[in-house]
Length: 392
Image (cartoon, rainbow, N blue to C red; front, side, top):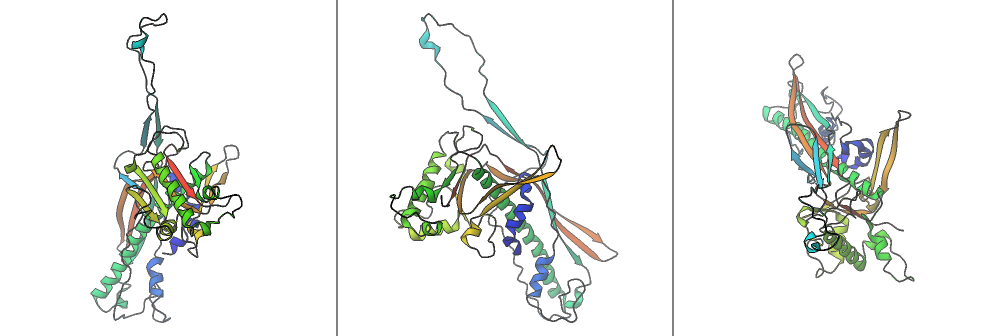
């Protein structure tokens, strides 16, 4: 899972993938080769294909177990025809004067069957992205490394498991990239959709008190209880019509069953083990779509708080005058501990999830592919709130 630690670098190079701007082509067989190198140390009698397998292995134990991506909740729909996703929004109808009680007044003029048009807005998401993973399996070249078809078959299973695991990991990374893009845009925007839980709590302390640091916040029962209260209060507020928690001023509301809440597991465990159990049950935010995540973009090299809580997203656009690509930072923020969002705020629509193969009869090998085409989107007009810990 080396790619897990490289998600931060991956995000900086494929940041446009979250909006469907570029295609990511991944063809890498190193996942299963590296596994073999951890077991074998002999430098002699290696095959030319992997340069690692020793002739006549007596027993094959494969630990390429299948991996199920834990975070595919953003993968929403699968459709077969057309490309464009249309989102239609109709503004709430405002109250008007009731003419019934004006009859008889001097300024009353009857109006028969007036046409009252609703305010309708639409968004069109039309970009698609595609990526594939592939692995080549020779017919005969590896057979000298095994003594029977059972052992050879076990190795083939390990290869195909590595391909399947690669697909699951890519889906998981795609979810990370999409969600991190949403978080970055909220942090970059004005308004009240970004809540600094640390700053909010420090603001309640007496002037003579020393403000807490993020590390101290995660150990403080009072601070954690205060933060849980603010997050629960926000969840309630998102259920009422308002225009405050989205980037385009739409009048929105999010019923609790459509509200998603992703919380960094460090915060979740800190509340569970530092706050009195009588205050909170299993979930301190009452929503059916509450889940914890280990990081937003990657574990880094240390799995430290500054790594797992970091969101750093940039975007590239073409300058209309010079024609050159210009890269700008959307947001760089450590201490992100949670995001609460309408289920329609971001997601991945799958257009095609297919398997394919190419056969070379002359060279006696087959290359197997897994290909996926989809649409990555973030809608700034939907309700999103980001929670983070940062010193003022």
